Length: 278
Image (tube, rainbow, N blue to C red; front, top):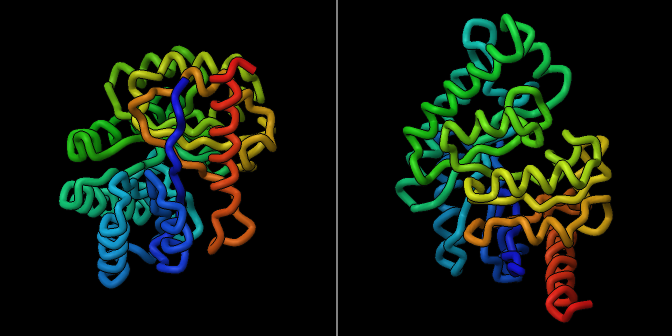
């Protein structure tokens, strides 16, 4: 039975960073926004990375921004129809890869998000398969550029989701370094724990990072561990022991990561009980 790492998430805001660092996390994942990609914002982000490293946390991931203006940063967005989104994704990913290689850290890019807007974008293609291939083409380029400094996370969207064995086989054929969000897969599988476990097992060797998040399995709820319906005893047995993890939990107060830390304590207690044979 593996013992999960203490992985916390926050922005480059010093108050948030210091709140997380008081717990001496093994992993820090930066949330980013479009504001981090101005000249001044990106310099502040790099300085924040150096600050976290100087405080003893060496495992650092930067999460590519979720939004560009009013849109999710959907990789499936065709350049001809969404030129601004397309170019922002290209330039911001290139910047993050450069920073990751310079500071020996990791970049996380979403293969997709969810909702009506992604469906509008998928509908611009002749088929879902064609839309999915467009996403793979971009991920292939990013993977070549980022090497061992980039990973790709699953969504609740038809273009890059886990839980469907045939899609997973196609993803595995690209040899991507994967990030696995437990809640996204659980929701995609409509709250089916057996399907989540099958996906964790199938992809295990290619997963380098986990977002450990609970859910009721119906919508994107980002619950504290133990507050949803995920069977964490079986999940623990299927995690790649060489991967990192964070607790990507909704917080009541962004300057206080209490729900993330309590999620870690929940898993640590579970591991302890399992090791004692309870």
